Amino acid sequence: MQRAVCPGSFDPIHKGHIEVIARATALFDEVIVAVSTNYAKTYRFTLNERLDMARTTFSALSGIVVEPMGEGLLSEFCHARGVAAIVKGLRSSSDFDYELPMATMNRQLSGVETVFLPGDSRYLHLSSTLIKEVHSLGGDVSDFVPRAVLRRLQGDVGPDTRPTPVVPPRL
Image (cartoon, rainbow, N blue to C red):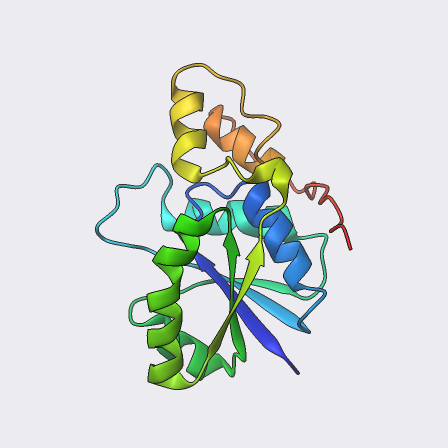
């Protein structure tokens, strides 16, 4: 089984993330969405909330597992799970400049490769930070986030078991 991991803090997860992860399922048998905690960041949502939003979002897609990454190196997480590749979405050349040294280090530490997928042009402007800022200033972010995230942003955190429709990848 070819397994990949899509790591990120996903605070919150948005349609740019979803599109890349959905495309990764066409390349790998299983994709682990590894929700991480970077202690240098201030989070809007707790780890459990971010896990819940990701699980709800991907519940209708097969081949996707959502897990907390835990503490430690991504390369160790990958090695422990038999992961063949790390999948990272790229919005621009600055994303590549940021990701390349980490990809090289991960390969040298554990042999895991990194696969870069260019983001869909519909979502290249999205970042979790921008989503949070626009929402906090009263902007409508409903076109950019899955239903589970929108409900959390709006303060409606009751159970929602309906999966978010995922736009199929363009091939």
